[in-house]
Length: 329
Image (cartoon, rainbow, N blue to C red; front, side, top):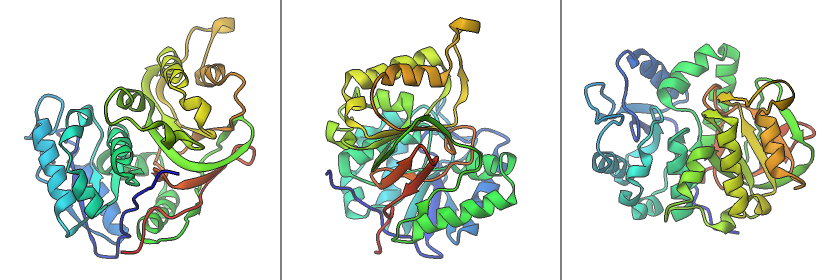
């Protein structure tokens, strides 16, 4: 089993920095960011907003050049006062600076990095290179400050604040993740294994680089993924890319998030939706598949720590974290 690198558990009052490792803050998003910062403070942390988060700062579709983004991230990784890094949003630019990240700083002082979408590329690349347990989790602006309010009520926010706080501060297994709605069994069965995954198209992109997840990271793993703004034909193709690379023959189960703007193919008798294409690619593989789980671009995200063992019970429609995401420092 590959070695994983758990971050140090946070303590009340620890400093968390919200930064822009990919996309910039768009004009008018300041209230969402402020509300996201308040959620992190509600978890008991001090929060600092990075100068990279400034609507006046941008380069094309990014918060800065790859060199600027890497320099900002490296400074946070090297700063002993900073105990966690939270992405304010996703974007399109993480791929541009993977080769500039200070991996020795991560190995010397592993810290939780939180985010999803394009940030999942960062999680997977750093997990491949160092074993770091990155947290596929909500972003500050559109997650903590947006979806937690527009797609959730106060009861759900309180439930998630408690869950995130336990995941980040307690060196103990968090147990069953709380579902907001009804999860779906697309293929029955039960499996246990380390969580690996993120945004599907970013996983496929990463596998074409030197920062690809090695084959043994998928052995017995629970592959989790979500997708946004893709027709099912593209998803079918990406899943076949994983099949051809051997990933689908190595994993023990699959967990699928809530799709966002994923369009079916055709209509009537020739219609294919997401469930159809997933089961078509899996063919006769006896893998449990749990779908519509609370993570992705259209849901308050449950925290999914890469490399941490989980229990997937597709029949009971449950997903439980069997190990802590952090260690006592």
